[in-house]
Length: 259
Image 1 (cartoon, rainbow, N blue to C red):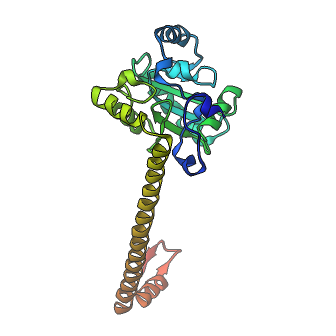
Image 2: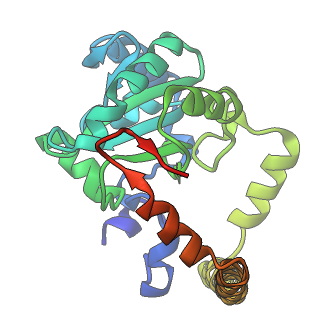
Image 3: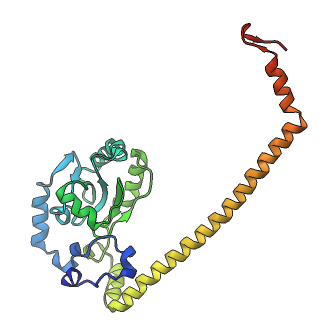
């Protein structure tokens, strides 16, 4: 199995929803040596760009282009109307971060040969899909897609280096201690922790849905009471007849009401 070749635990059905990236691309921090860092800097200049600052990612350049970066990525298809609508805002955002030491604004064409593999790895189901953070385990961005909203989000979320298991050089002593503690745990214990998180999330979602359901019932009751009150007001004021009489006194040819 490819996951064991990388020294990572095998993906189980219970943990499928917790994994955001394909384990075939995950590397241990010790593999990133000074030679590779130098090569990354040299190869970065050759990475194709759609416009100033906007990096085009493929399966071939993904690790090199994102190494040491905090990413904000757009997965899209050329035929997608929503993708085209946000294209100018995305380019503007990319220009803001051109040459940035940490942040990387990128896009992936899911219809291209190199992009299709990435989209499958990240389990992209709709377009556009925006992911951010650690390039090896990015999170989903669900905010607005206009420039102002994305620029504000980027300022608060991708401007600093990310500590991760794959980029330990960005971690402080406390974070390194925690990573070492977790790394020393058995695969069964780690999977147990992950399953517990998934269970807790499902329970939280169920509680949320229950509260939303109660609010929906309350909303429906309020709407019904409001409509009843409106009808009572109209009946008490004989509004129906008033409206009919006023309508009968309107003379279209004269261009004015006869009151």
